[in-house]
Image 1 (cartoon, one colour):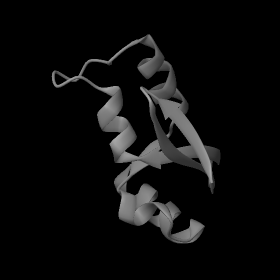
Image 2 (cartoon, rainbow, N blue to C red):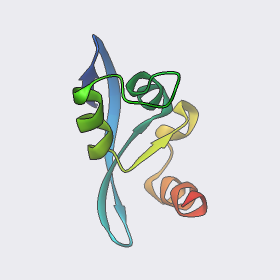
Image 3 (cartoon, rainbow, N blue to C red):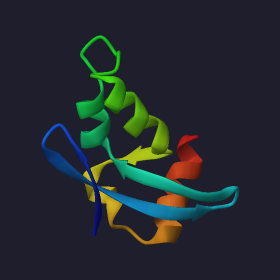
Image 4 (cartoon, rainbow, N blue to C red):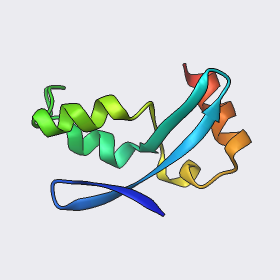
Length: 77
């Protein structure tokens, strides 16, 4: 499994082939770690990580098939 490390924790990432090109996705836990309670970035590193992730999925959906993940993403954007 591919991971990104942030603030001492590892979070899974994966690439998904979307109709408009390959995109990197991760889990909402990472998104939560990147942001302060007021919605600002935790740090400059957090901004960099966030800008490299196209979409954040709930953990229970992260390991679904690529087609199901694409469906979830397309319904959400």
